[in-house]
Length: 511
Image: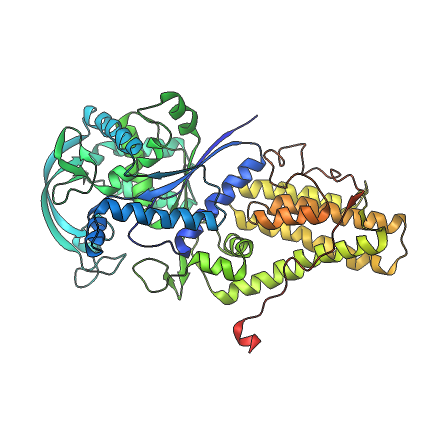
């Protein structure tokens, strides 16, 4: 049965260029979508840019441009970066687009008509970078933002407010009936803690600036950027404009976010959905920070790494593999160039690359270049069955590092089998054919299993094995399809070429 899978990412604020931290969110989301396409699911993958608010208005002014000109130019940075990183998104939404503005009008009107928005006055400490108010107790010494470590501003203005405090019971009931609504569990507990400690109504409009979507019933106000930006998830799938399309995708929603925006996505957003009369998204996946020198990589720090430049240096697939393999989804991960190179040499050059090169060379020398069919009874077949089951469970549980670890265990098992049987010492014949046929079959299956992380390399492995089609064809990982042992029928011409993953050295080693 074909399932629907609607994957979203945070929409990125266009005050600066993408960095490796934002790229990590995209690569994880992309890998999840690629896996679900392998299963044959109907996938819709959304990303985009957040283009309103005081911070952007100030950034544009500092650059001598209008806000619209600034966001038109800067949103292109993200489109180009994601294309360079092999991101397979189906849609890219901008919050300045007409489809978003129209949908926001309908969404907030529903909340207003249901009695959850009212007018009042607000005064408080405001961080322009966060586009968020803070209470005194949350600030660092010197009235500095706890996230950006910059001075906050005291703002007083007439606002519209969202009656969040009235939705405590509804939120608790939702989480009680959806125990897997937030993963990992620590983030679910964080959301529940925020709800149980007492919810306060929050401001949803501004009058101190005009770069935003006007409030439909009071155009002197524009919506607070977080409030309307969250609605990109519903506006992209037709809320208020195409009900059939909205109902197709909304029950299948999976939000991937960073752990620093749990409050917005796991408290505010489900409350807003309830207030508007729709069900909250059933799944939020919160990842940790990508750290450099022990600090979160962010635009306000000097520890940014350009993901496109890095991919150009070490290879796109090795970078994707490293981030998915070495950063546990849900936990913080420390990024170092040395760690990337170490993982590349250990897993790609020494294991996968070595297996591919060794098998290709032996098939050419022992089998005349024609790949033998796999045998029926072999320990490798049992290993494949076990690994495929583990990989399925791991992706279903949002644990890509475990899925890749299991896949590389299979590679290690295949390499060990070759070491044990030493086909390079045997004369051509049925015994060698069986050994090499099994190894080719493992490589075929590994190419499928690795394709969510390394799509380009997986395609190249198939080409070298002489297989037509592609390892990432939709449905190839469905039960009874391409992950079954024996799908490689043999007699295909293998290519013996230069190593797919030549070993890398650090600059210091090269000197």
